[in-house]
Every structure is written in structure tokens, then in C-alpha cells.
Figure (tube, rainbow, N blue to C red):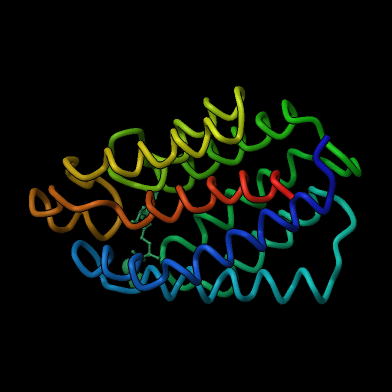
Amino acid sequence: MLDTDFFRRWMAATAAAVDREASRLTELDAAIGDADHGSNMQRGFTAVTAALERESPATPGAVLTLAGRQLISTVGGASGPLYGTLLRRTGKALGDEPEVTDGRFADALEAGVEAVAQLGGAKAGDKTMLDALLPAVGALRSSAGAARDAALAGALATVPLQARKGRASYLGERSIGHQDPGATSAALLVAALVEAAGT
Ligand code: ADP
Ligand code: MG
Ligand code: MG
């Protein structure tokens, strides 16, 4: 079973990974966007960390809905509403149980990823965060480690793609040959699940 503390550890491990990788995320965004993805994610997850300390949400669902709200309200870029929607929708789908099964979490994350697709209108292969999130959701039915590997592979597989959504799509064919920053941060979010499970 996954308890409230697991979800707090997930958010904390994501915040730490975003801090560690912020300059790389910004470099990737400099190549095909506006060079702010690292600072956007850092600002967002710093706010998530502060809110979780301040409010001590009591259930898994409350942890994720609170985190999602912070991302929406603090991140100016496209990634804020998208990641915010991911976490809010996942949290809502977890309901108000004090603990959830792995299967329930996989269902909830699937609902969250669908909400991202709906909000942003992107599909698999459009060179967005969805290219890491969609394969991760399928693999999470097996294990968090499988989800991490699938998300990383999905992020790496964005390199040869042409962007169809977001700022990078303005570059047309010049977006080819670069790894998508949002798919890269999504892989960090999924990898943080393994860290959260390991303690
Ligand atoms: P902005 O592009 O507004 O500066 P960020 O740099 O923080 O925002 O985030 C860019 C990332 O957001 C992209 O690399 C991509 O993965 C993701 N993204 C942008 N638009 C969409 C969309 N419509 N659907 C899904 N993801 C998107
Ligand atoms: Mg940007
Ligand atoms: Mg921006």
C-alpha cells in the first residue's frame, strides 16, 4: 500500500531532482524553446515543498492536489498548468483514502496523463512531456522501476521527433535533433517514484 508519506517522498525526490538537473533542463529549452524550463520547474517544486510543510495534507490525494495547485499558481510557462493538471487530476482520482494500492495509483496516474493530453491537445509523438508520461503509465502496472525506464526511453526518443505542440513547434523541422525539455523533466518525476518507494 502507498501511504501519504510515500506521496510526500515522491514530491520531495522530484524537487531534489529538479534542483539537481535545473541547468540541464534550461539548456534543453534554450535549444528549442525560451530557456526557462529549469527555472520554471524549480520555482514550482520549491513552492510545492513549502506548501507541503505548511499544510501537512493528510491523504495521498490531498498531497497531490495541493502540489498541483502550487504548480498552476507559481509556474508561468506551459509546463505549470500541464504538470499542475497532472498532479491535481491524479490526486482527485485517488480520492480521500489514507492509503492506496499500486493498481489504484496506476489508474489515477493514467487519468492524470489523460487530463494533460486533453488540456494541451498533444498526442504521442508530438515531442512533449506526454512522450515520457504515456509509456510510463503503461509500465507502472509492472513496477516503478519499469515506469522509470519507460519514461527515460520515451524522453530519449523525442530527439528525432519534430515538435507539434508548444513553443518548440514554432521551429518546425529545426526542432528535430534535440531532446524535449518537458519529456526530460517528466522522466525525473517518474524516476522519483523509485526513490520514494526505496525508503
Ligand atoms: P514554456 O514553453 O511556456 O516556456 P516550459 O519551458 O516550462 O514552458 O515547458 C516546455 C515543455 O512543456 C515542453 O518541452 C513540452 O514538453 C511541454 N509542453 C508544451 N506544450 C505542451 C502541450 N500542448 N502538451 C503537452 N506538453 C507540452
Ligand atoms: Mg520554456
Ligand atoms: Mg517560457
